[in-house]
Image (cartoon, rainbow, N blue to C red; front, side):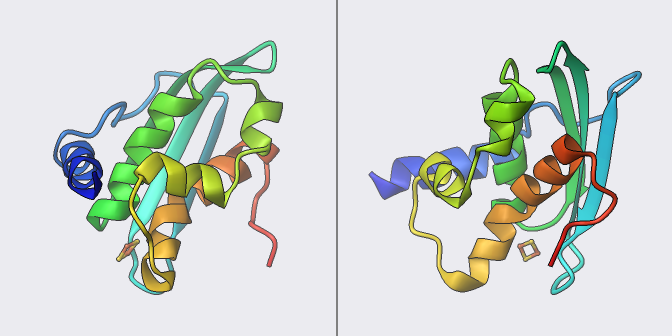
Length: 126
Ligand code: FES
């Protein structure tokens, strides 16, 4: 079963969904994993508190980029409150493979960027 999930991760890494930029995003946030320099930007179009369009850009390892690609597919149509409630378990379930502590920062980078964007924060709190 892990193999299927691994193949899915590799597919998202090689053929990322929703990669690029929106014409006029309502919210944009960019952040970097300080340990490796990998980065992700997420842009959102929001109407009536709901995400109607999303794009991401970035560079980095397969887990970080595949996670961002999958996350963009998951959040389209969700309300901002629903996105605020997403947690680490949602990401690990989405990826579907065991993620060790070292790779967890890779897996969570896109969620961190998304949450900061949704909360409209300039910086992520420590
Ligand atoms: Fe940089 Fe994964 S190695 S985010």
